[in-house]
Length: 94
Length: 200
Ligand SMILES: [Zn+2]
Image 1 (cartoon, helix red, strand yellow):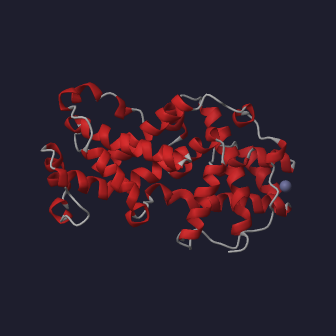
Image 2 (spheres, chains in turn cyan, blue):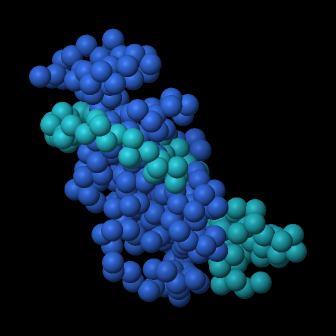
């Protein structure tokens, strides 16, 4: 396995989507190739690093003008209560 | 007019908040925004990579949520419900506003210039270090620098934690396209963050 091949398959390896035979080749390659070992390690660190970002919030104090505008837009929105049943289909996609 | 000084503690409980929202109590609306807008905005900004567009999606999300309050069944919690609406709104916004797609950004293989260049180990151990604000800003900046086709897949898969299948369904892509784009996004982000990570 060359470095190029290893890099091309790196995410399959990280995500455990790789055949056992290829996994063995990857492991043999990184045992001897420092560069690929670094790329593998740092990519895994990146994934760990961002993993909890999904629950990140931006402190309201940092964006207070933004939230103020939102509140105004929200309070001044058109009153569409009678139409509320027509909008029920799209919260299923994600 | 509800100002920033209203007593939000009366809505600490989600059921009380929901009842207030259904009564169209302005304080309940203020409370909903205070509690969930930061979460919704962060997700919109990550997906869209643009502060103005994210603000539009933020407003759209809360207005839509209020329209749909009658259909909210309370199973997932208000936070996840809003988060899902925001994600759908942002994806819809992307579909409507991005006719330009660079062919390089949807290539099914990694490009020669995407091969890793920065080959020093990172000193920072993310498992041990909480994300500080400087690092978060770096990450936000790096994400915004990714082409949209790659960024959206990365946000849904590696940040939000959706499966390949769920991501493919949300974006109307095949699973192999999701995998390739995720891989290319990781390589590019790794490169973008490497200079900082090697030194901190
Ligand atoms: Zn190698």
